[in-house]
Image 1 (tube, rainbow, N blue to C red):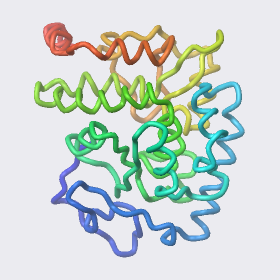
Image 2: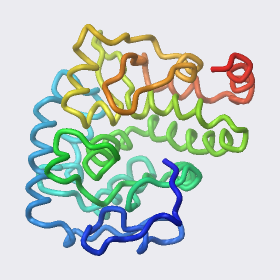
Image 3: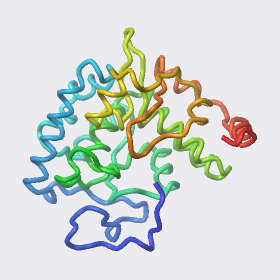
Image 4: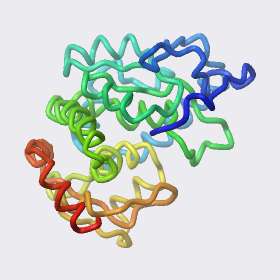
Length: 272
């Protein structure tokens, strides 16, 4: 999530992507629906339709309830209006979306989470990135993350994670807590009604990873444990070899509630 802001310049021909020049002090930028071209709206629709077809039997119950039960999350209407979503989200879980131009420094990102603000990238991938994109874009951030914010227990955990990550950074322990985020918020699985389903944004927004994570016999699916996730390194440019499976969101909330300082001391002693 970190970068050198002094190295960022805005290319006026690049549109919304990486336009850090126009951001506020908290790194946010306004979302202007008129900035999206007809081609981008069409690309959004194709991304949504492809992924929606893969969700039944693979996405968790809470995710499906959110996208089918809230007009603000009807992504088939086009690129969502953050203001409309925020009205519904505030009423449900007291969160709001904030537009951002791209990757954020760690402390900025975690401060937003700690204040119940979820950063959503305002730009959409290019056509040549349709199947795979290296960095988070509007589709990944919105399709993958936002529907789960309508689950209050999950949303409370994400706020607590923001506070915990700020503390971890002060303690020099952020790498370990980043692994927990990766294996839960990004690539987490949950067992519901005897089935393993996806709730992590990186799984839900990827056609390849969604089918692979839930159905393939190749990866290892391990019961979720906070220390195990923080001991396990992850892959950033391929599907995961290991996934961690929750029994419930209450388990995630309870297991991350204690002070992690003793955990970091153990991990440091282990050289994890």
